Image 1 (cartoon, rainbow, N blue to C red):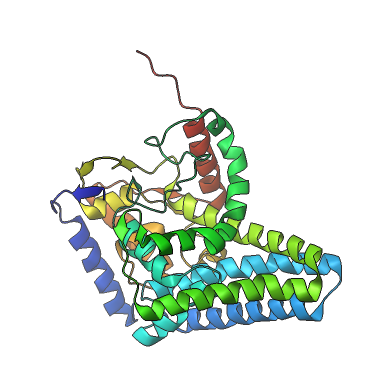
Image 2: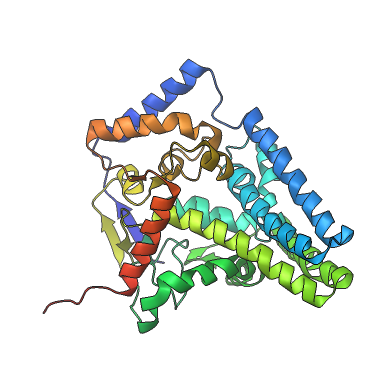
Length: 359
C-alpha cells in the first residue's frame, strides 16, 4: 500500500478555525447535527423517490411522460445521495447513532454499498484528498486522465467532451461492477477491508434488491425496450449530477494534486492546509444550490469538519473565509455553479492537451 505523511501541525490555523466554529454553535444554541430542515427534506425526497418509482413502473403513464419521470427519478436519487446518505454516512445526520446507521443504508437503496463507501470516502478520500495512488475518488479509468501523475494518451485530447458520457454511466458501473470488485478483493486502493458477517448478508441482499427492483420487475411489467430506455435515462441524470458535483469540488484549476504512486509521499503541508488546497467551494450565495446539493458546494467546510451537518454550512462559510484570510491561507471558491463547471472542463481539457515540454 502506498503511503503519504503530512507535515506536523505547525500553525494555529486549524485550532483558530475550530474555536470560531465552536463559538458559532454556542451563540446560536444549535446542535452540530441535522435538524428539522434536514428531516423535512428527507421526507420530501424519499416520498418523491417511492412515488416516482410506483408511477413509472406500476401506473404505466404514456411514453413521453414516463421518460420525463425517469429523468426526474434520477435527479431525486442524486439529491438523496447528497442530502440524506452523505450526512448519515458521516454521522452528522442526527445525534442518534442508530438513526445515522439506518439512513446511511439509503446508499444501498441507490445501488451502492454504504459499508464499502465509508472506507473509500470517509477514511481514505477525506484523509488523503487528491493524492493519486491512495485516494480512490480519483477516477482510475484508462480513457480519463484526472491528474498530471496519470499517464497521458492521445485519446485524452477529447476527454473534456466524452467525460460527460463516462459520468452518465458511472452509477451503472458502481452498482453492477465496482462495488463487487472491491468486495471480492477485500480492499479499496490497497487499503485492506474486513467485512463483518452482517455486512456480507446486507451486500448480497442489497444487490439482489437492486437487480429485482431496477431491472427484473420493470422488464416484466413494462417490457425490455421501455425498461432499457428508462434505465439508461435515469442513470444518465443520476450519474451526471453526482459526478459533476463531486468533481467540481476537487478536479478544478484551483485545486492541488499529489502523486503517491510507487512511493511514500511526504507532504509539506499539515492535514488541514492540505484539505483546503485540494478542495474548492462553489456557488456559496445560492440557496437553491445549497438545498439541492446537500451543502456539497461547501466542500471546504465539509472536509475540515465532516461531523457537522450540511444544514449549517451556509452560515459557517463566512467563518472559513475569515479565518483563511487571517492566516494567509488560500481559499478556493468559485462564485457560481457555472464558473466551477467551466473550470472543471478547462482542467480536464488542459490535462488532455498538456503543453509540450522544452528539453
